[in-house]
Amino acid sequence: MARAPEKDGLDALAGEISACRRCVDAPDRKPLPHAPRPVCVLSATARIAICGQAPGTRVHASGRPFTDPSGDRLRDWMGIGEDVFYDEARLAIVPMGFCFPGLDAKGGDLPPRPECRRLWHDRVFAGMPQLRLKIVIGAYAQSYHLGGHARGSVRETVGAWREIYEATGEEGVAAICMPHPSWRNNAWLRKNPWFEEDCLPVLRAEVARLTG
Image (tube, rainbow, N blue to C red; front, side, top):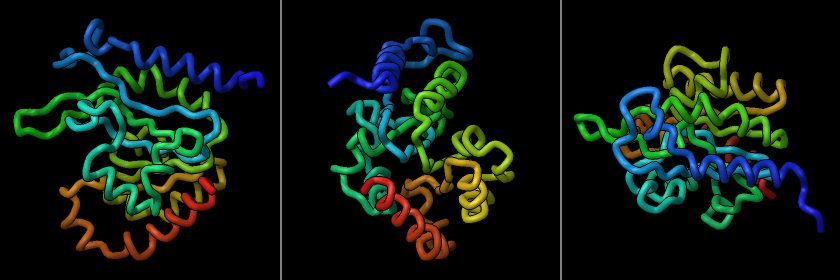
């Protein structure tokens, strides 16, 4: 059976991304402090894309997205196991920065590298027109994917998740805005039970529908 042109195009693009060294060889700011290891999953068939920030230290070591406790929580939020989560036919994973950006002076992750957004993201999402849902995590991803629908802060944007979900759905690709599934957000989750009570059932129903 002949391969679809879209699949060939995405495979070629994924090859370009995996070989990218721009943030070391010709960076926009201080060079990446380690060898690049881009981590993303492109798909010509998936109808869902997880749109997050950037890989952390464990993902940089494994070369596989969300191989950490945040991934465990995210899969629980979505109501799926690793078999669906890592099935590229059903799920694309495209962070704003493809490589681990390094650590700041306090030991936290630096922001996603700006080179990825400029070089790759428009091409990546133009190559996946079949997407119907974006799970959008964090300020950088929300700024890129939501445009004028984003609010002044991540908390405000997540708080307006239903309005944004309905408005973006009418435009063609619905977006559900999420807090980061890190343990650092445990206090926020306790103070905002509506997230688990109202948002997660909608997320799980959409994930089940679009991956079934």
